Length: 483
Ligand code: URA
Image 1 (cartoon, rainbow, N blue to C red):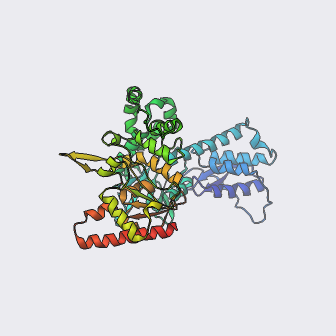
Image 2 (image 1 turned 135 degrees about the horizontal axis):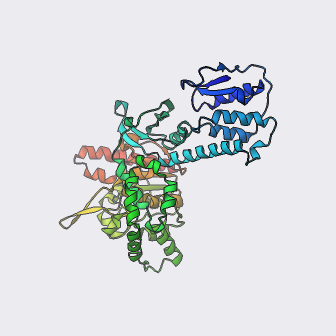
Image 3 (image 1 turned 135 degrees about the vertical axis):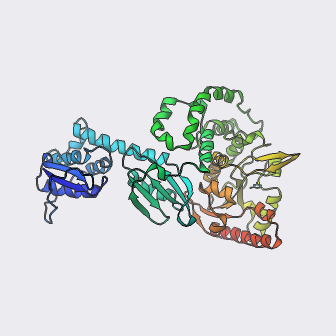
């Protein structure tokens, strides 16, 4: 027996190099033992010959390499030998991979498919928890147990998606760390190393509850998509049994409480249907709306979270359908809720003043909010503003995304932290990130600045004047980017 000792369980380059050398030297699969450094297996075999300089070149189908690269991440101990046997057989059977009934081909393709599925599940079910990392830097940490060894393969996906976040994904196989510059891969961890609960848990639960549609519940299909083995790391999984149990009751309530059609003669029945569909039934990434009119109508009927219950009406964005710049606030205030237009109260007047000082014509911008209903509590007769919860922001983000897709602004200005959370999908420190052009996935540039209400609340005149000057500077900067 000859032994090949690979550097790790996922050492595809090592396997490939060894397999090439062995095949070139006509060493049959039956004579081979494949092991991984440190596994303790195969200690007694004689080491396989090393690759030499002048081995005869041979080619293999691209399809084989694609299958092998994935299949090697499978947890089966058989995978290295199976792939070498296929490589060996390819010399005499060049079309072997097309023989789908061949047991070796079937097995290798099955391994590759299972690995692809595990990668897909990892992308969908990793949940980060916010922690203070080294030197107090905000770090997002996730614990995950992938069905196969896909962590290193998937890590660049997370790095692209959360490029500006420090994060670690801990798994029993390996851990990956991203510090906004580079990815590091370290040995596997223990579940005890991962934080359990944080303030984002509520966010996930409210978000999940808001997109859960009882009328569409198919338990078997849902559990196939979200297998139980992943539940223990999903904050929202705790809700699932209750949501399933209540689904029937909720469906009949939904039918009973279906919002009535708005009577506005301006709305065509197509618009109304699209809006109803979007506001009640559509999943988060479901049917897209195509006009601002549909959004306006849909927001009136929105039941994505409970804020509609206490608000007079929904307030959608306003401005040209192709504005170069979009301004996103937090949510309508008391006056906006009554008037049905964004930024018309005290914060709106402050915004108008600053826009004028910055030379930005408001009528050329699209002004909207992260949350479309006024959240408040009653104190006596007064309606006092309450900051929307992260789950409410997440539930309402669907509307903002539709507005973004229709308007296609070059620049999106987030006024305050809630707007930034909705626009970027994660919390941002306004003071630190202002005066930067931040790339957004929809080709727009993002700028963050203060919320005008923050300026109104500052008690000290000096501090207020300073913050106002920065606010004007930010609006000027954003407008210059939009030009
Ligand atoms: N504050 C906001 O964020 N938006 C408004 O429309 C009004 C006040």
